Image: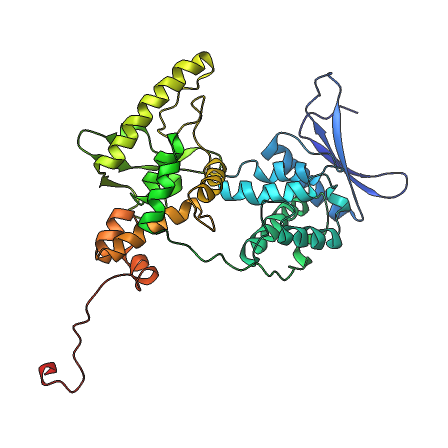
Length: 371
């Protein structure tokens, strides 16, 4: 009988009467032939599994072992999909909690326990609220659904997993006063001080501030162009938050002076690092030229706030919230703030309505001037 080539397969019964779907894989590094088998109860089921094997081979270039782990299933699920920072975080939680488990041995009870541990904060730096917990379950379900499609398992145990109740309350967003912001800037220096200035005084989103490049700033004209943002993997991409998120704003002498001072300090760090320096065009960079990450900025904020006598500490995004709040308190209109902050006027009107200083011109209902 002629040998089958890579990608070909067959359906047959073994001596025990079980139906088998078999596919030939490309030869391994040692030159030996490789094949994958899937057992089935009927011929039709075996033929369906053979089609799934061919589909997986066509999409990924190989067929995973039937004993593969959740980590390997996640890799297959990721292949061919557009990269998403949010997916990286959610799938990272799944991998941390269940990555070592074999796909075919995963139980509903283990999924329940994993979700409960996520809610308690076992696989992150803090407990997870109900909305994010639901998304974690959705990603786990999607990974196992892909395994069902490929014929690795017949049941998606994550679909019936139970979401635990959680007592995590949304953190009320805090707004710094101008005095608190000045104290924070007084204890911050270097790239972190620049980021705090850009977010807390100029209203940039932390992801936008971290993505800012030297070519985006005109220090002579006092202008700053917001054209990109950083994702969770520290990769720069276009701004996505709102249609007017890409914008040009004016910066004052305080921000200009801080940027000029940091430019000098950065040059000194580059000279000191020599060959270890990683050349980057980003303004906010670390000791050897690497861009500042979101966790690095958040950690710096947690350390600096107590030093500035700010308790509880504020998050990087709350710096932007503080900047918008100050503009609303100063009497700026909702459309002026929206253009400056790169967001919608409706968001400013709804979120900051209580801070917008407006005089109502509506007269009493029995006023003769109403006619």
